[in-house]
Image 1: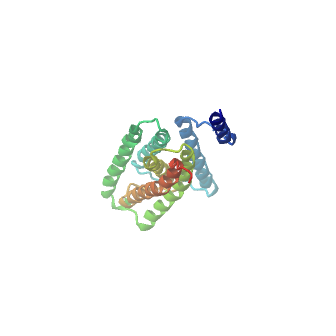
Image 2: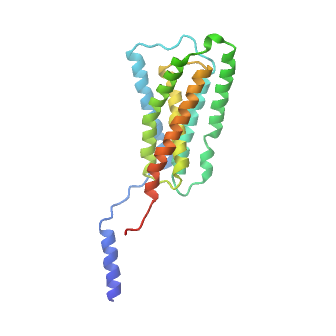
Image 3: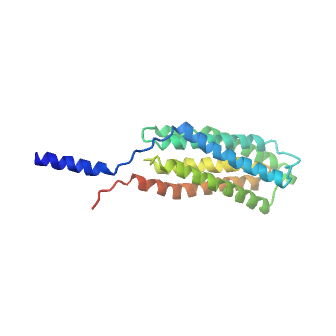
Length: 223
């Protein structure tokens, strides 16, 4: 009886300070929340265009708009895959979800790059390269933070793939939103700036996001 009483008291002590856990929203709903944040950022950029009375470029590269659509689809699918993969019972195959859209994005940009080589007037300089890179990085930062905050509460058991998918989602969304405030062509330097921005954002997310996710999974015994 004494041992049974000790166990009962131990259970009571352990459960005394427990707080109810708020259930996570399903991945599709969290992805919609994230896309709402992207839409909100797009509205801010549109407001900036209106305030500064910017009407955009007079001529639009025919490859830019399809590329922007492909990058937008990549962002949406990568975000959804990140939220799915953050749950422990989901298959690793979710990591492959954004790859077809990403391949289409790369293919369209590649075709635009080849086409621009035949038009020397379409080639941009280093200022255009750095401005594209800076804007995409600036747009990707708040979206990366939103992804990390939303995913961290799920305590993913596969932190690195989730962080990479989150970085891909943020950088692809940034490349899509770029068209709202910064007209560009499918020139070599423009596309190089896009590629570098994706690599940098994915790398930072993998480095920072992955480390932020890991502590949530280190259930260590108290000394």
